[in-house]
Structure formats: structure tokens, C-alpha cells
Length: 162
Image (cartoon, rainbow, N blue to C red; front, side):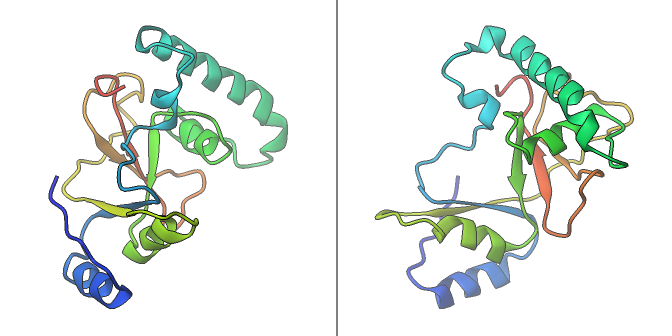
């Protein structure tokens, strides 16, 4: 992974202005690995992770329906996105189209060390009509339909990575 080091907002702005394409993720610690929350669970080895993830999603669907009003998701992709934004461990990672939003997430917590902003470009978008989130085998980009916002892009980490 290529890296650029900056020490001021002006330097950061110059770098980001030249690299406006792609999606961004800011992290407080530069050593943080880009692993979705469901893949960071120490309680479930990878062999049981797939089944555990599906059980958690099924429970989330069952228990959240009374609170959804008219925003009920129509597919597992949108269910995962909704669950992600309510704390459900999923195979999704939040990214943004705005490098400045990513910069805020990189520095908004007190930390005495290096932070990082990651940029992804050229990632294929998932076909929600024909691909299940539990069968995709490569990193893809997903734009949720349930709570679409201008700075909300979610990168999907497949089974092979988890």
C-alpha cells in the first residue's frame, strides 16, 4: 500500500485535492487493519463466523421490524447496511466520498500517534439484484438504498477475506 505523510492541514488539502477520485476511510491509528467488525470478533473462529453472521442478521431482522415504520429494507444488502449503522457486526466497512469527512474520523479522537486516511479507487460495484452478500468472493463497493446519504459508501469484504 502506498503512503503519503502530511504534517499539516494545508499539506493534507493539497494531497486530497489532487486525489479526488475514489472513496475514503479515516482511522485514528495508522496501524489499524481494514477488517470489518464481524471479522474482528475473538469469540468466533473464522470457521463459525459465516453461520454466526447469518444468525445475527436474522435476529436483527426479527427484532427491528417494529421500529422501522416504512423504511423496511428489501434485500440482505440493505439489511446489512441498516444493521451496520445500528451496531450490528457485519462484513461491511463504512467509507465516504469526501476525503475531508475521512480526515475528521482520522483525527476526531485524542491519540498520540499517526492517524491514516485510506483511499480506494476502481472497486467494482456490487449487483444487489444478482449477488448475495454471503456469496461474493471479492472486495466490492455497495451504495445502500435504505438510508442513502451523499457521504455514505460501504465497501464490502467477502468471505475469502473474513
